[in-house]
Image (cartoon, rainbow, N blue to C red; front, top):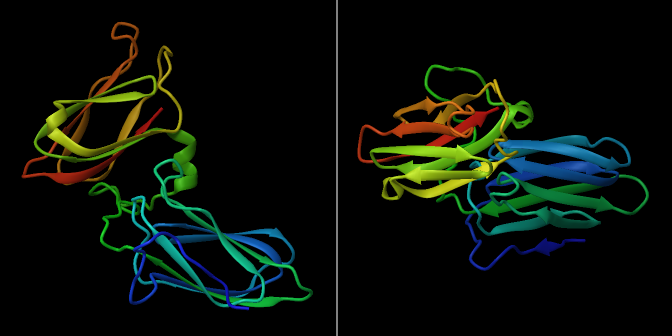
Length: 230
């Protein structure tokens, strides 16, 4: 059976950005983020003969996605579309209800015109990002296009930018709030951006446990992704 699931209007492309195939027994879920793909076997035997190829990474942006089932006898559906709330992750569920193993081949399309920040590191760090590890320590992921110098003040589950005109496309995703806690260890990691990011004020009782960091772009503007760990 060939089953096609359309995303939203306008999600068309000449060629798929991701092609995946494998032999499925019962239920599996594919999780896609940037150029990473993870497979979770919900029931049944492990996947046999899996293979996949990315033509482009899944961007950090909310956008239409189109799924085409080229080959497969069961049911295939999108569980999660990329959003800020799920850290721009796409999840696809494959259910093969018949006896034995069914072969599936999927083609997935998205808009490659959006910039993606996944996989970037600050210059000179040289380590490979590990989202599962970062999620344990990260309190905030902040991103924006910065023009000049801005100050970001973090308090609780809020992140205020001054001056407001110094940044656009601002996003602040909190994994947990910055709660009042004496002697809290805080660190900051620039994941993308050509300029300098530095902490100006650490949270203390004297400043009502506010964190202030500065983002300074030396040119006409650049996109920044900053992880704040606590």
